[in-house]
Length: 160
Image (tube, rainbow, N blue to C red; front, side, top):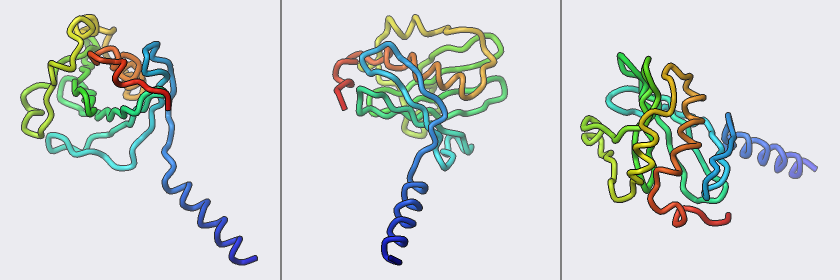
């Protein structure tokens, strides 16, 4: 009886330890399917700052995207990192929209791969709306719009 109780407690502890905290879900209306946003346990060091990070997964794709929230003097940058494409969404007092990663991120090894970037969709996403969004609200917009920036969305989607 003690062994069974110990096994149940161990299983409960392990599942609680490795479980991720889902903070938002939504639809992308893309081939990659619905998204799920989870918080990460540890901040990510970027440009010498500890930045909050979210992990975005998609229902029909093995692609996982990390959204790192970096605060500058004038705006917030939502740096989107994935195996296929890395970009940044900028939120300032005037607008919220996508940009290529600037030169300062190249020092850390991150750059926008133009071969994977859908340029038509990129220009449609330059301004997605007014600025001054909260971290989670902006991350939800990133999760919904990012799949359209990928050139070959069909390569990224598969039934799980």
